[in-house]
Length: 631
Image (cartoon, rainbow, N blue to C red; front, side, top):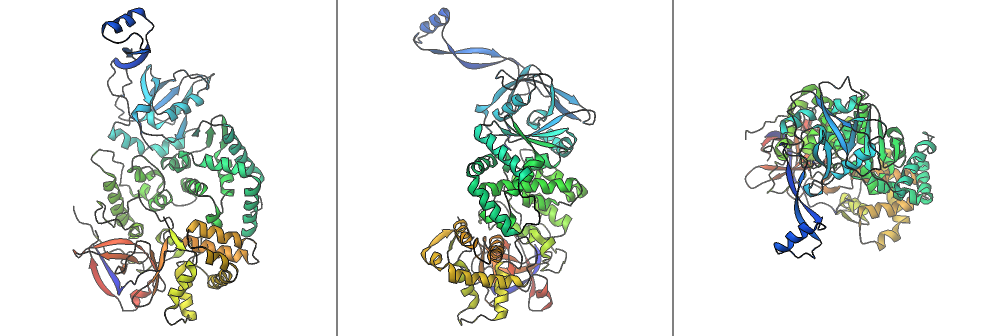
């Protein structure tokens, strides 16, 4: 329930659309001889004769035979401390069975060890690899087997911590306890090894290219934005093969895993291992950041975009771990929301150790009991955030879920959030405070994007209205609403941004008219890429690039609409005619609510309405107070 002020006006129809870790099966806990079916050639005359007696043709090349195997490893109850792996000596290129010992230790401080960061791979019991742990049978994912074989040394034993082996994944209580210690585990390791998989010749070229980028390119930090863009375009022309190999590298599953953020961010030292090639995290970070310029993010291939966002999340978390910044759970969830994890509950649990507010306030501890669902965890987080941070910012993550969903609309479902750049996510820069920093008056009960090529001009027509007149005041409302009053990097937009947009509109009318008239319906990526290609050589290229970046950041996933009272608003794509624009106490921005037949309301998402983003509507006396039950 929430009390709020709302505008009686209902929305008119919106404008055309704006460019708009798996865990492997664990061994049983009984150490007993086990039998399995093996396909064996019939070379023994006695076996072949028995096959004939029992009606199996002797010409058959294989027979089913019972073959005894080693007993399986049995976990001992871990009441305190940790487990650590002693990787036995072996040639990295040797395909023979891998051997290790699993020891119990009471403290990490007295041990020199490394920790492994890797992507788990597909969770299927039919594709497991067998190793020997303390001389007993143990089954792991093939990707982990490949990593451990590559990392073993022919000269000495190697001490390493690996979650899939050092934690009994079949014990929910142990798993929850150890997850709370993982930041400490990775922080105290001598180094963290990032395993990206086995390499080939093209992958080696990618590592060489990244080392070159890290040490040879872009040393001039004062270079202007357009100069950096021209430099990137030149690299694209001259290093086509290397870029292709790098894109293939960045598509490895590790780069979109949720768990790896904490693992690398907590590390004293981290290295990336790709077969026989290695690169330090520092060189890797420097190189990939030079492949990327937030000002021109729509010019970067999608594969690099997704990987780079996770790399940026790791670097942000490293700064927080080192005390250089403060990272809330809200922020780290936003930064990692598109990442993968086989257990959706780990969307929350995998990043708890990085959140400053969680470390201070506690609560929300991991719970891996089978009866605890992802929906339960997401609702627990939503309630925790409202109560501990005194804000309704979580409503900005609403995704307009269908009526049949089991999730309440006010609790973000972190599996399906699809808008990366939210107004409430940038409050430290935007300073939005639609409810004038009032505490939330809320409590809880018990129980593909497509657009017209001339989309921008159509939005301008909507703002102009039927009389065809666009006053300077209305134009100001228009340009601010189009970019939600913000620059591409989330700061309040200065007045000259309005002038820049006007120049950009003239550019489209005068120099891009052929493109506009010959394009019917194209994807947002096509539209921005095509227009951007025309921008590069224009005399005012830097100004146009700023406009493109602002629009890409704040308009690409939203619609422009007018309310019944004629206000312009930037709204979620799922908004419908008849939805309400509301200011909720404790909300940083206005929200769209959808009335239901039972008198309750669903949260559709956040919105921007020019003139009321800093609490002005509360002082005008034109809004009435009302209680809403959000479901």
